[in-house]
Length: 79
Image (cartoon, rainbow, N blue to C red):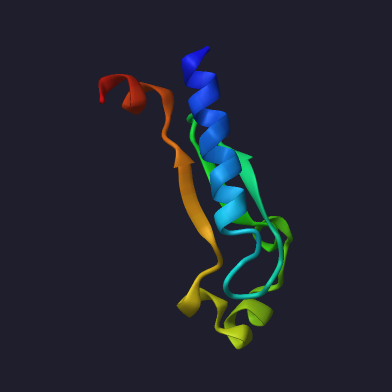
């Protein structure tokens, strides 16, 4: 239970600190990945975009918000 409380506090704090993407202004949301990690990511990253649009907007140079909130389980236990 303490791990769940800690993870929830981390998620809530990250959303409070960074509610929107610094590049595009879209909201951010926690996203769980298969390895057990949770990242705070710009919601526009989940939307499919044509390659030409990504190149012309130069998004790849600046980078949308994507921040690790909770590390994968094996890494957290070892620490």
